[in-house]
Length: 192
Image 1 (cartoon, rainbow, N blue to C red):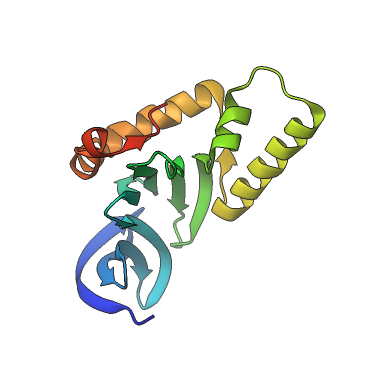
Image 2 (tube, rainbow, N blue to C red):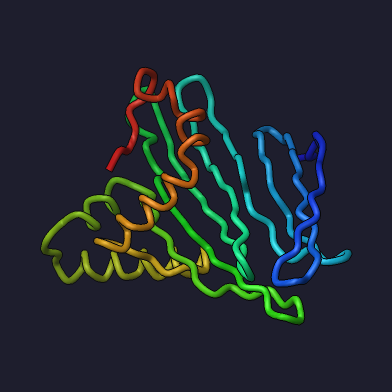
């Protein structure tokens, strides 16, 4: 599929005394996708999705993201949600926070990343059950390992998950409200 370039903007940034450029790209294949790319000189260092939506008249999958620069850190936030009129496509639901540091030489390194991701009803049930059989424990551990590998982040539950959710929802509050404001009327969706 051919990607149609919709536009871009560049913003110079200084992180830990090192000059970088943030490039905002909007693409439209069969879905709308907006990303920011972090460059140092001509080298692309990181890419982060700020908006990605796909669906049809009865369902929608949504990814929202933003960033914050503090001292020698660039922090990326991500939020995933799905809605469906029939209640069949209410996953994934997820939250992620990634903290990258920039050293004095301009080297960008992932310092910490946390994620909470639910990709289906069975996983949701496993994450909320108090006691699990040996097979269920194995399935959940395998699922968590896969998510951690796929997203290069530590899977969090319990109190850590609540803190992550508060942080991501607070940071992306306006974007979440704007992009899901009619979901309660139109879709059934994951609210935990």
